[in-house]
Image 1 (cartoon, helix red, strand yellow):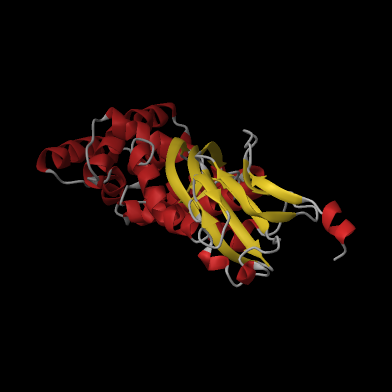
Image 2 (tube, rainbow, N blue to C red):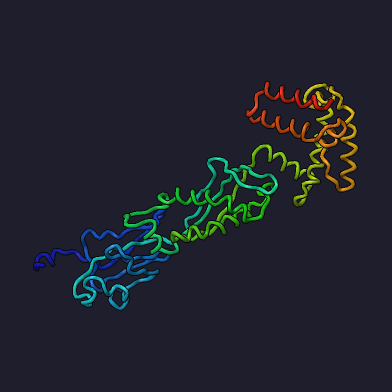
Length: 346
């Protein structure tokens, strides 16, 4: 290098990042052909980390403080160009700053209902949303796995990937939490804690730390929301499905009687075909079952009075009615099946 070239060459004396609150996670110091001067100063502020990268390899990481760049302060980098000459010449290396502040109020949610397994109801679907906080914990890992050599990497750049991680792990979180599906809405804190336990290792794999998570809402399907409302209404505690079925039967009897009296609906058709005498027996047997702690369903009493199996009448009709309400069966198909099943009552 000639004397004039050396004079024209620009050297960096101070390396620092005045971080702006714009969601930046990683920022590359603009070298633009300049080299770091022997004895130059590196300023790393609180909530920042600085990473030196040479020829694509992470060489050293600096925490908050003011650092004088010499072979004594950077012993790991002594193998870089010119460092073996004790800084007789300046050196060039990329410097990346990483923000370690908490990135708060990051949104997550289920754009579509997701299917999870439940001990009581089998496969069920739910919607949920909330927020979470995270920070960079391992800048070296984050640099090599995520941000790379980009000049600027923001929260918005990684938002989609993190949302995907949340959605991918919700089912496992619900399963590991041990919370019954009907209790999720009433135990949002426990649900959030289960999500953190499930997701924290996934965040660590890319150099992030999940600081916290909230579940702000859990939306149940309409039919299960009605069951939850009934469960709350009867003051039920735990998972005693027998008592729950008794309560459902008691709730259904007035509607059953109303349909029978008007001669319309499934109940009216059944009574018109000779099953009317079973209604009184339903009430008597259900009340007796409640006193004895026995959860015999009302449909079984109706079926026994009519001389047919329970699954051939009311249970099947209820399932067909549910399929019709969901649009799987047409009204004509439902009516045909209903007539066929009700004939078995005679």
